[in-house]
Image (tube, rainbow, N blue to C red; front, top):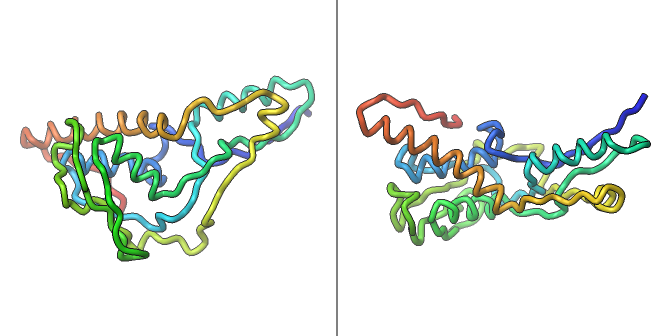
Length: 197
C-alpha cells in the first residue's frame, strides 16, 4: 500500500474555525474595530507557535503524494511567533498600534495610535485585549516549532505565504464580516455576533 504521513503544524486561513486562537484574534479585533465588541479576552499570550498558511500545506500534501516511494514529512514553516506577536500584527493590519502593559493575568493591550479607516470604533487609550485565566489550558504546550528541512531538500517545498500575508488575508475576511454586521446593527437590526464564552 502506498501511504505517507504529513505531520502538519498549525495551518491557518480565513476558513479556520472561530474557536482556534488565530481566528479568535482576527475576528475579535475586527469586531472591536467596528464597535461590535469591547475587549478580546485571551489565555497564555506567551505561547509560541509555528503558523503557516493552509494553502501552502495542501500544496505540500499533494507533492508528498507525487513521490515514487512513499515517505513521511513534517510540514511547517520552521519559524515561530508568540500569540502576543500575532495579536500585535493583527492590530497593525487594522491600523492599530498596541502597547502591552502588565504581566501574567494583569497583562493588557492598550491602543497607542489608530491610523487609516479600518478601526473607526477604536481610540487611543482603549484596552482592547486582556488576559483572562478562564482561557488558560492546563495541558498547553508552551512552544511548537516544526523542522521542514526534509520537505525542502527532497521535494523543494518552501512555504510561500508569510505570517504577515496570512494575517492580512484573515483580517480582510473577518473585517468584511464585521463591517456587514456593523452596518446591519446601525440600521436597527439585532445582529448576533459570535463570541467565545
